[in-house]
Amino acid sequence: MPVVSQPVGGPDLAQVRRIVSEIPGPRSRELLARQRTSVPAGVGAVLPVFVEAAGGGVIVDVDGNSFIDFGSGIAVTTVGNSAPAVAGRAAAQLRRFTHTCFLVNPYESYLDVCEKLNELAPVPGEKRTILVNSGAEAVENAVKIARAATGRPGIVVFDHAFHGRTLLTMSLTAKNKPYKQGFGPFAPEVHRAPMAYPYRWPTGPVRCAEEAAYALADLLDRQVGAENVAAVLVEPIQGEGGFVVPAPGFLSSVANICRARGILLIVDEIQAGIARTGRMFACEHEGIQPDLITTAKGLAGGLPLGAVTGRAELMDAVAAGGLGGTFSGNPVACEAALGVFEEIEAHGLMERAREIGETMLEHLGELADAYSVIGDVRGRGAMIAVELVEPEGDRVPAPDLAARVARRCHAEGLLVLTAGSYGNVLRFLPALSISDALLKEGLTVLGEAIAQELD
Ligand SMILES: *Cc1c(COP(=O)(O)O)cnc(C)c1O
View 1: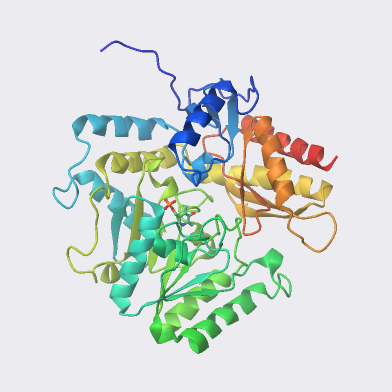
View 2: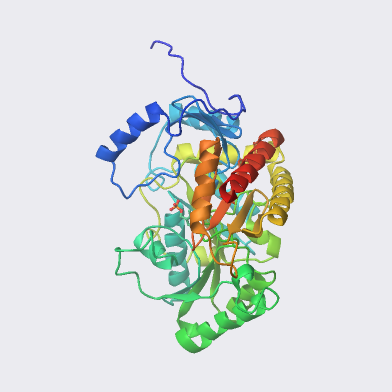
């Protein structure tokens, strides 16, 4: 085969911000025109520049623009794009075999990933893990397991929750547009409780945890009937909902409320887990021990892999043949996941996530002091957001301002994502492989974008 020079990503990619065309550039616009005639309109793009290579803390597009990446493909490339251990292990596996179906012929790497998650997950006692293809599939399986283990149908979720786009997980998700509009009827036996969202709690942040816990217990005891509820499902930090960090103590109250009623606690770590917040699992910050944990996004460095890790007696409640899937736990994705854990350990990435969080909180705190439109700064580790509000009024969400600031950042070579039930949150999810120089440059670009929008 002829050797063709290909662009190479990974950490060796030049770590610079560089804008050489309009955004999107001419070549991206050509490809976008093809997308419009070949891909349905329902598949949107935050920043429609087509990618040629990525790594470290940057994404390089087909027009030669290099963006500082504060998105990580939505919290997926936590260890960096094409990180050496991930790319090396996956490439070697591609040459050995690509697939057997674990349900037909098992292979060792699947066990290695499960053992790793069992070792690390803050679930009490003996544990088991099942591997699947995506976050939504992990949540679906966690619900199946919880129902089979308890014999109860009900699932309780929270305001602002996001759990996926399949029928069940869309039903578990809170926000109507764009996730649910037109897609009903929804799955039954889903009940929703208020989230302990300190910035927007009606009586203020101080009483937030206690009042939200009371509301949950009331929903369980008086409306649904605790004996009808299999599980309470909660994100340790809400992702799409706007990086809402539950008021301190709320998650442990949820755990206690569940335990007292024989209800299982499922913690959805799909966005916040796998070293993103400075701990392997975000719920460790609150010291809780869930019955089941779902992971996906950051688990395999960009290859599709999700998992449910849970107490052995619950996981084993489903009869043989009740769980699985054709592609589930694909061997290339399993090798990639092992590479992710190697990268985290070899480079001290949990510590790095904490440092990134400190840098971001310090800079964003200064911005919040300077600009009253930054109503709240929150998050943990490399999962930080600002909530934008109108200059006048009491915490009035400013989604248009958030969209304009994001667009201006994009034009200046900084990829940021928006989030939140009101669309007014800018969220920052840099890879843990980003340099301090790029991180600070990105924060400077953000500050300038806000200043210019307010001019
Ligand atoms: C992204 C996400 C999901 C869904 O994951 P997919 O891989 O997109 O199906 C579920 N829960 C949370 C918290 C997420 O952030």
